[in-house]
Length: 222
Length: 222
Ligand SMILES: [Mg+2]
Ligand SMILES: [Mg+2]
Ligand SMILES: [Mg+2]
Image (cartoon, rainbow over all chains, first blue to last red; front, side):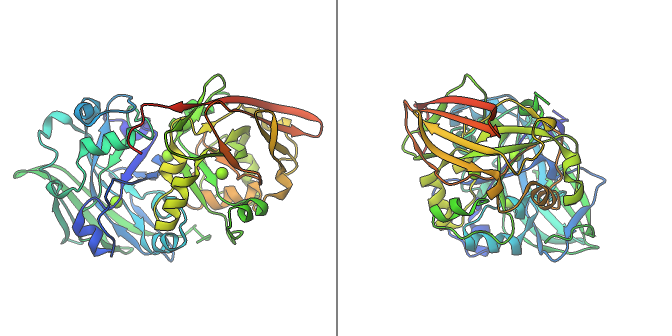
């Protein structure tokens, strides 16, 4: 499943799944999981640059990604891990000003979350390498300064619950990615910044990614 | 491009693109286009049944679908039709109660719009067969009774503007579908109902689809 970014058809991203992060943006912790879709056209692989749309404030959100290994619908929490092929370290980039605007108006989040390059992603990590995905350390630095440093222990809804919830609405398919929410510490990135993020299990770094940010020039519409 | 439903990676659906429809739901006509994403897992081909999630009120929205023929980013309105392979008649099914709830809370529309079977779709119509896509009649009947009967003449934002807007945010890819919004007359469908919809150019019916609706039983989460 090294090719999940090219064969996958959807990215399902969970909102407010760490209580400290929900609170830092002034939101309450949800009573049931909710999600939004990011287009697969937003994937950015190692070597690429994050393109910041002119005039928008873009926030980093480091997240554990779950890669789906086979098609399933109405998957129960009990059988959820049978459908998991592995994991990936991802960043759910967000045009925060645009998101705040649509939240006020009750409009969809799709644009604020869906710009090209808004889902920087690391290599596929086979399931066997992470025995306990609810005990994983996620961190993100901007220009070498630690900004986010959390543990998946603090997820409000765990992976089996997320898979049960999503697949009760839309079937999951081989190659789909679930972004499981971000710990606190989100904040803006600017042109010239470099983001570094990592996924650690114990004292072992299983994935590390680095992405520079540049201004996007051709975007004249927003 | 008969296979756009299997190769396509996203469905970009425009909201409130006919003023009569915006008004019938108590909304204002938007000053610029906005869109949400539907997952391709929501496609329903001829022969299938719409599955109504228990406890939700599902509304029909008949729409002109635009099938993208080649990849493009920052496509200008002028060159937009170079990226169009053709069209398809689609229904953007919506769990209206769920949508009203998330609109109030400023939450994403993805679940309300994204259930399996929520995008019934007709056959691919090659571009040559519709010389003027802004003069197409769209209609939808429930159990033989006319409910929606509109013309793409009344679209607030025309196809070139939509393609320019979307592709300034997310690149469009071969097989992607744009649902261009629905004329007025939306309303609920119930188990046992049969929807029939058509796309006419002049006195010629270029596409006609028919889908029965059944209750979905296994969904216990909503
Ligand atoms: Mg999608
Ligand atoms: Mg996020
Ligand atoms: Mg619609």
